[in-house]
Length: 479
View 1 (cartoon, rainbow, N blue to C red):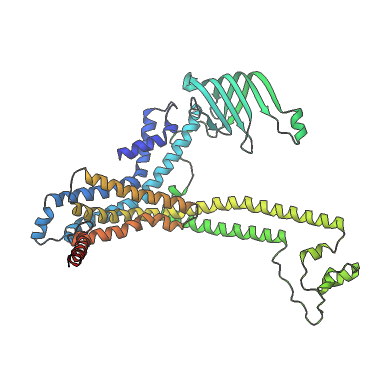
View 2 (tube, rainbow, N blue to C red; view 1 turned 30 degrees about the vertical axis):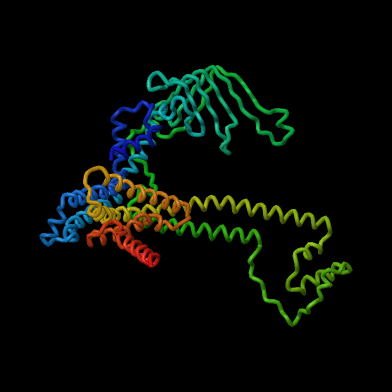
């Protein structure tokens, strides 16, 4: 548990370090993170404790005494199996109720830290992203770190480009109670902006603009500046929802995605004019014309129109040649522009749909992970308990190494499968259950080996066959 706590601290060190937070707020932050560690710590705890317990029993010949008294390994495991089932139920309760609530608390706390303490959003020595500005300061000082020294600001455009750079020797963060605006007042600096010209020649005439200033004020909008750190926000992600809420949202997300895809498909179809229903041609009133008639150049306009009406299908180049040369250029250019616009629309919609389906996959993944966590406690017990009985070693030496290796295998398979599931490379249900399903046959195999009082891998019969083969070969050579 302590190892995972320290790892979590390193992950959120940017949110905690150097922001003037008192020890109570940091303690609350870490306390809210503890339930999230159960899905990592609990499977490892079950695996390690079962290996240590049964390994110690086997090392001290406790199982031999049990078997002499008529107690089999399965009978000895029954009370612990019941305990693991109860533990799985508790794990499901944590995943369904406690972890979503803690995720909500963590989100609110991280969000409100930057709101109540505006200076906390700016870290010394690095660029901090604050409402469309990348801000770097060398030092913060004064009451609530409101005064800044050596400020560098990159202002981002709508295209996420840094065309504007502002440098100042000093700055001050000002805010008023009840206001949703934080004022950053800069002093003694200069302003640089790269001019984006409409044409290449215009860029040569005015490549950039530069000015010096004594005082420059930037208004940064941060909503609800005076709220408490514990104030709740009605924000719901997949990790903040329980099973019933996830089931409802999965259905609604799927329905919305299908509607969006259908509407976009219909829009593209109408813009292309393709896939429209065609009336069946009247074969009695149409006469087949020779192919050479399509290529002849002596047809007048009236004949060409009659030819167009009488033929069932015509090649694209034949249709274009019905028009004059300058009209052909206009038609081809218009077709290229239409195709280009449609492709751009498809590319833009593709990113939106990928984002929507990723959210949909994450909801399915979160739903099944709650059940997979409960079942993993039982399956990892059936991996650790017989493995400890087979290796017959207690203590924190070999059992610890084996438990860590097995858990890392289980954990990384789950991480990779979850990432693939989010991107839609595999089904989200498989991504949630893959690591547990891989451990299931291993648990069945080890339980059978331990019940039959056999080693982890029995190579005795293989070695005997090899020895027998060499004995026969030596006899043949000797004779």
